[in-house]
Amino acid sequence: MPQQTHFGFKTVPLAEKASRVAGVFHSVASRYDLMNDLMSLGTHRLIKRFAIEQTAARAGDTILDLACGTGDLSEKLSTIVGSTGHIVLCDINESMLSLGRERLHNHGVAANVSFVQGDAEKLPFNENHFDAITMAFGLRNVTTKENALRAILRTLKPGGRFVVLEFSKPLNPVVENAYRVFSGIWPGVGEIVTGDRASYQYLVESIRMHPPQDELAAMMTDAGFSKVHYHNLLNGIVAIHQGTKG
Ligand SMILES: C[S@@+](CC[C@H](N)C(=O)[O-])C[C@H]1O[C@@H](n2cnc3c(N)ncnc32)[C@H](O)[C@@H]1O
Image 1: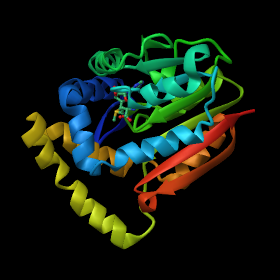
Image 2: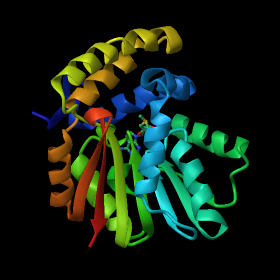
Image 3: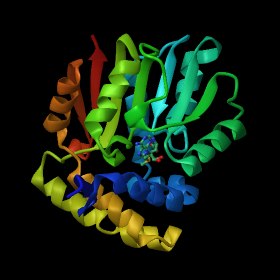
């Protein structure tokens, strides 16, 4: 029997997950930013700002925005690293990466950014290359997270920082129940806005299947990161994990 993994609540052959995830993001790409604003009631912008602060990025840094999607983190990071620094936007999905390219182009950001289509599990970059790596709402979608964590560690410079922003497990059961009810309407909203209910059903299910805070922290430590810790935001609906190389 082939190795299996989960795609939302479904069990699928390991080799099938990436193409299923690709289908989701090809389908939702054009309405991705609008849906993010609707589903998070705008809070994703503040959360992402906090994640960027955790990178301790400064002028001259070279930073990878992995699973960059439509590039909102990259745009802010490019301002921080300035003309002596560089941001690489990397995403496995051509539709999402093109929207990132379009956003940065439309906002006049070109000099210190580059775009690479690539898989987090097999990062096409040299060892010890990046001062920091961000991954916002991407890790959940990766087939074998352990492979991605090892690839990220390899490409970070010694002392470099990995900041991962993901949905996580609410601390308070009342918040958890309220959030379940709220997120239960996302597939319906997705159907109205994008015509695609199934992709937003996957989103809700993938959030529930993602490792909670301590489990993800342990996975990062097992992959070889040091100083692993996390911040809960919105009572743990999302968490920002950090780890350092060396
Ligand atoms: C929910 S979006 C997040 C986009 C953006 N970082 C944000 O915060 O809005 C998840 C992104 O992860 C990308 N992705 C999924 N699997 C990936 C992989 N194995 N390697 C790189 N990117 C991946 C998807 O194509 C998609 O653009």
